Figure 1 (cartoon, rainbow, N blue to C red):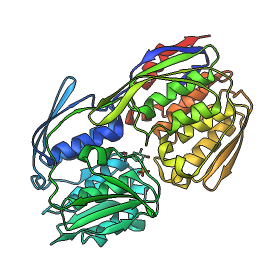
Figure 2 (figure 1 turned 60 degrees about the vertical axis):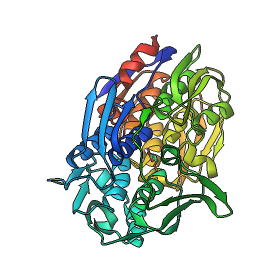
Figure 3 (figure 1 turned 180 degrees about the vertical axis):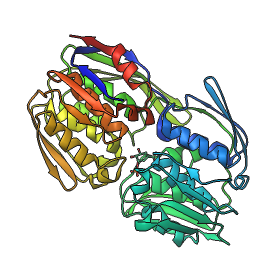
Figure 4 (figure 1 turned 135 degrees about the vertical axis):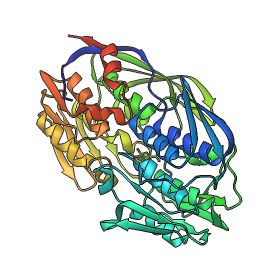
Length: 428
Ligand code: S3P
């Protein structure tokens, strides 16, 4: 599907977004490993979370989706049954990496694959430490999926110093650690999103070498009630539009304010947008609240180092905002952006250039020289949900029409994106 739209005069109103994708995957997985019924309210409606649900279904986990509440009838850590066919994680890196951690501890053979994009993404980052734990995993060429997982006689706990901050790798090892003899400790150089630790109530400690989390083999997951906060990474698109478009003000209701996820709000403030946070409360161990962003003149910023994991998924959108800001925006230390659902450095640079922006590709990021305006253009979504949505926002403030090719990929995290955009946009 191609999405075609001329710019909007402004964006106004309040909105909600689907449940947080990262929290949703984990709520499903942990419920499936608990003994008893868990209830999840506000589960993400996106395709990635459907992939996790489908894989769990193939593993014999009973899941009922009755309206707003998803019920998961877990039967314990070793209750999965051998799937009749290969598990399909679709486009979802989180599904593949987290699930592989669990499958490494099961007593049956299984295999996980994904779509064309996911089959190109690096799996070495989980396979190597899982092999160190004694797992029996065979990857395909260049350490990619499909992954074949054979029952291991025994997993053993390890201490793993992660070369890169990654919540997916950290969570995969924590999950495998639940099946391993002894303690498994993961050490991140910089803290990434901590939904797994919060949900399992694991203690994180800061040490000279990084942030450590330990799990031991006797760990049992309890059934729980999860209230999934709105996804800040989905809300970010409209918050960015509110900052860019004159006379705009938008409010995202009930989104996660977990500090490992709010780097984008810090960038909005650094760029000079007006940001108001209200109604802060807690739901299922996660801070949540309403965020209002109103337009004001934006300035370029420098982003890198420890900030990156706190806004990794919002970087394409920050590239778009940078084009509407005064001065230069520099994004560095984001090499891993090349390993996401697309090479997001190339996708941002090429699409911004197509819209007339002055932009330079760096090995680990990009530089955008803001001019305050973009021209409508034909945009390649690279079959990447976040690129499709970020450039729909770029098109809102651009001169002329913007066409997003393969815009339907937005459904991976936010099927209601275009509908919400139409509701909030004030037409010219
Ligand atoms: C996620 C972690 C991040 C993020 C992804 C979701 C998660 O990836 O980009 O969209 O749910 O754990 P990495 O952990 O690979 O950085």
